Image 1 (cartoon, rainbow, N blue to C red):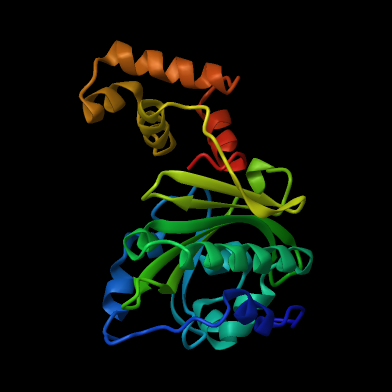
Image 2 (cartoon, rainbow, N blue to C red; image 1 turned 180 degrees about the vertical axis):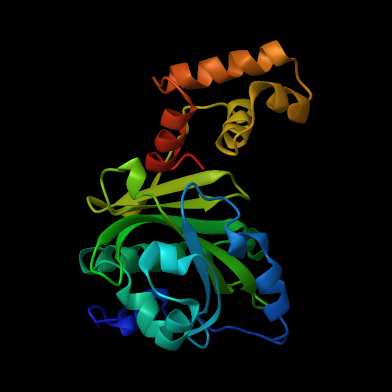
Length: 258
């Protein structure tokens, strides 16, 4: 892979973290984590697991050849240089800025809250043949040190070019402990609070719709009446001014709903 970005900039974005690590027997846990294996994707995907203490790649999974034309072995051989250079050059600075802000945010939280924070990036990347893709990168912390600071992350990379998202690059930081959500884009480089247009119940249904559940299966899963599930589904589409579930998935991705 041609070197276009310097991974040292990525290291600087994370900043100096005084990790306290007593256990190192985490690899089996990492490989079996459902997030590493495309837990929630809406397109062709692959994943890699990065250790920010050692700056080594621990594991690669999924269809990397189909997405970016690099094999698992090529990715592991490229290691930290691959991580930096598969990001589209014009988006690299934004990614580093977003990571820096996220780490500042996490370090400012109470210890019990830190494991519940993750980021989703919407950026561009380069395939081996030079074609530029738009991707979703779900950046999920997997392993934490004794101070609950994450140092091993799964990066689930999904090709979302077919959804034609706009305003790229952008990112969202989610805190599942406090149910807060923050948004960043190239015109707003600080973490900006985001407010969902959907109620908590509607969000439960949105998550199931994205997984392909029918109204009947949603009703069974949530133990509600079929007619109630259909009404919720209609209200969700109406609030977002959408016509069908396919448009809803696009809306969720572009507006960082999940």
